[in-house]
Image (cartoon, rainbow, N blue to C red):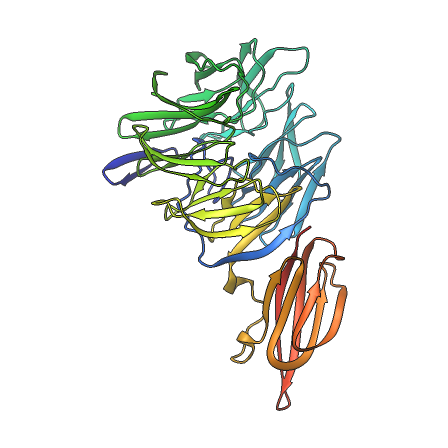
Length: 474
């Protein structure tokens, strides 16, 4: 167990059994969305990966990382694993859609599928077991520090009972608890920092506290929402002796709510939101919470519910917010933007236009950022210095300059004349042309993806070369 003291507050975290930078949904079993790793400076797009089948990125479909930096995520009928450079390691295909983010622990990866199974694979792609379910949760499994896997069932059209199962790492069942007249799990559950209690929202208009040793219900809190389907996974914080359980609901036609409970299920406070809530709250260990809503509103509040600041993006749906090591907040928008925000003011420090719906980002072990956007495309953002190819000499450091306006790239080598070649991901040349100062490449007729541009020139009989990666978005 790990204890972190910040600004006079004692923030209690349950240690993850995995040593990876981001092993499960919202980083940890409490769904805090908080990592101790600080993102790299001067981020730029390094690479993208397009899955075999286009699929919605979904707000809650975060990728996960293993101890070696390999990446895992669900995209339509495929579940894929990539190496840290974005190359495909292995994939699984079924006739059914894979749902939600995976979770990793002790060399295994667990991912739910709408064929009615929770699958366990080795991180090298060998199937270990499949646990039968009715319809696995969108939110993905939650892994405790002892390796226990918690996963909820959604309902079918004819069965109005939901289940939360606790499984051993070998797939055997510890216990299963049922919830009658429930519309089904659409969230990941959250563990108490002590590991003794798990909080679950099965779609019966209540959030339940359950003993992890026995599966017995401890208490239930009714949130009195007209629409009892919840897409906001609970998150849990403990500051000193005070416990906070946070979740949002879809509410009714007048909007939803953010709700904060004590550890005994007593309501601390409720905040009304003019739009519905599907996002999971992020928890800053210095004593602040970040709440997003479908009305493009992000709020920072303290533990008493007092608003510190709010930020409207005017861009439709928002992803879950996450918090990196220095406190900066990362959030994606429906309009295709990924924002990095100042935690003190909510103002944008840096933003990236990925072109279409941006999901919930994660942070890798070296401070790189991964995010799913558009039709299930995974993007990696790293510091610009790590993206440049080859070891530059003093002349070639600034030989190649690239900028983009709309669908046209401007490729420049200053006052020099030379050769420019552009290659697609298969290594095939799509353009070879003499470049005299500038070259304009219109990408409108080229498929989306990563392209490599190489330039060369000769000065006083000495050859100089440079290269860069270009992104084409449709």
